[in-house]
Length: 79
Image 1: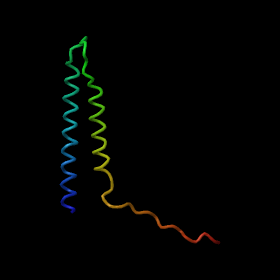
Image 2: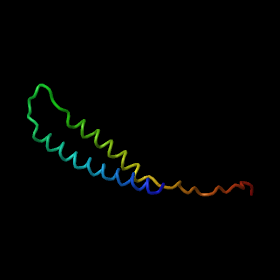
Image 3: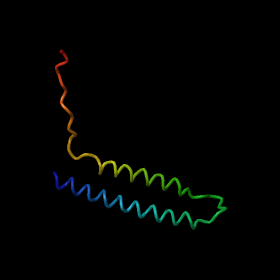
Image 4: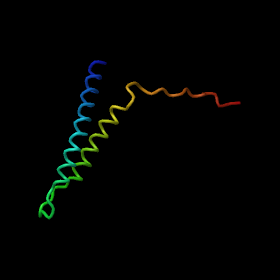
């Protein structure tokens, strides 16, 4: 099971890196896009969607792999 988790995390890290490179390509395409077109491609929407996907991947990668430790309750409330 641990090997599967490690493999998944590695693949997600690769996807995260690929999204970073893809965002750079999108930024270059946006910079070279002709102005005054009747139908405009919304690069900013694409970048926002890529960032949202990337954040979801990063949230998953940064989440604890084990359940969190919760401090014990005192339990005795009488003095």
